[in-house]
Length: 472
Ligand SMILES: Cc1cc2nc3c(=O)[nH]c(=O)nc-3n(C[C@H](O)[C@H](O)[C@H](O)COP(=O)(O)OP(=O)(O)OC[C@H]3O[C@@H](n4cnc5c(N)ncnc54)[C@H](O)[C@@H]3O)c2cc1C
Image (tube, rainbow, N blue to C red; front, side):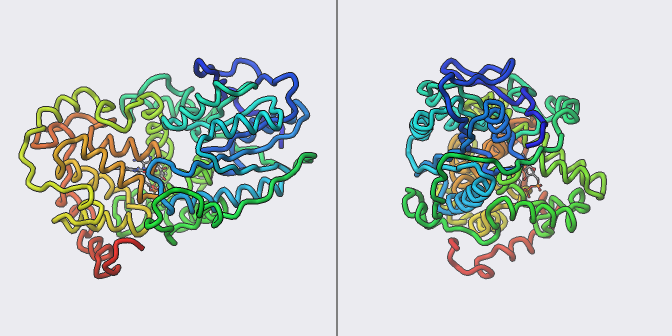
């Protein structure tokens, strides 16, 4: 590793009582013999600040560094589709770690905190490092681990370019409140990564796991099958990014809202699983020779909007329910609870794309069959669920269930925040009052018609075109 140090503003000590920013350097248990990196959200080897921090510490202490990934057999609404994508990416990371002389242990265990604590004890860890994730389930795992670990425990934000706990200590109101902070701090944090070079290692290397064997043991829905639209792993992510920059970036600013055109980057599945770092993407986009509006527009989504979503989930534990909405939105939605609904559908009718609206059904089909719905359609899709259910609570729960079940990039702060924006006005402003929506921004099919060829989109994702079965 080169001599670049990991910025201490990324590192927080986790103790049973909470998180404190690293003041000096990490501590090390006096009888420790190695450093452990508990990989979770950032599933890659290079360009990973959490692994770099663990390696830096191991070099300073002259001890080995090892990685552990703990797989739970059930995770939120993830299905075979996402487990397969994720495991193939982790298998690639395990091979890469081994080729660099870093042992990568893979453990299937329903209690990840227990798995990490017992591993740390077995290998005599002097300290454990992990990556940052604002989702409640991950915070709970870390809190459980902090209570039982016998050595210092650190979290390193390897997902955000500007560390989420550092940029803000409260829920930001909207993009306009976080944007100036992002732009002010970006030059300090958007720096190149040191690369990891081969290590000498004198402990045993675990056998590499077989994806198909692990998939037989997980307890998830298996009718939502893997998709062929996205190739898992870091190498595929890097290749895909390069193609986007070469062929599509210049039209991102004027064609990104057209779901037929295909000028978005489609990077979200790899970003979600941490196969590629947003910082790597931002560095390449910034240095691309392309249209300025496209570069600026892309960085706005990748940095401001994405990091705003992490901020929302970090400081709003109700990010996945009605209580997370602003009070103006709650009041307004309450006032319209008894408004008549022209159409009301059950979760199953939504799931099977059985609404009266061919545009909505096409979006649902796109998600089920490709594993990724176009970003513009996601807004329309979620807002119509609000319009066609009995309550906003039901709408939000159905949207989260469908998003987390079918999208490769689901179960992500971006998803919870995008749904809260669509249904609960989070990060948005109050609009004109109208039935059911109250002051929440409304969208209709005519709005879509003014942006793109709706008939073409419906035809692309119709049952005639794709066969009658919704499930690939
Ligand atoms: C109802 C709803 C649900 C959503 N669910 C998810 C989800 O589950 N997972 C997810 O990653 N995103 C979600 N989004 C945000 C956004 O739609 C997707 O990130 C985007 O469509 C991903 O496609 P892309 O990579 O081609 O985007 P591009 O337009 O190429 O953007 C590049 C990257 O910027 C980030 N980005 C883009 N738009 C947003 C946004 N509005 N908010 C936050 N980050 C953004 C993403 O990381 C994305 O990969 C949702 C939005 C809505 C309205």
